[in-house]
Length: 113
Image (cartoon, rainbow, N blue to C red):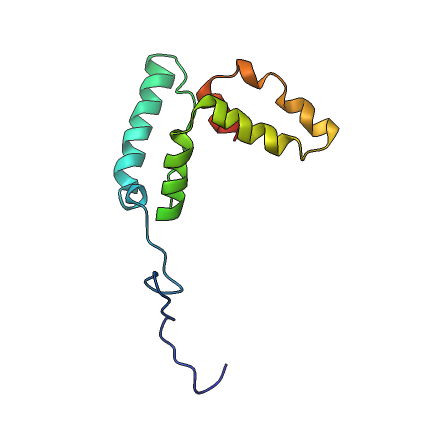
């Protein structure tokens, strides 16, 4: 730290400020989304006695939201290609957990990814 440094955020091209992130729309609506998901969970679990399947995390920043949307738009062959390319980097004992990927649903494959 030096006296010449200012205490204001550093500005970078394309960013608002170095220390600030752009919140995703989902995070801005967190209370509303959480309330809806809670009602869906209660209805499915206790009233209908069913499972909701895969839960998707609420993205905090805009970059996470865009990545999540990109993953959801992938087709199953693309998902399997990505998973298999990553599985090949694992050791033999860890690879065995990923057998039978072709029989998994697209949602399950996205969850694995």
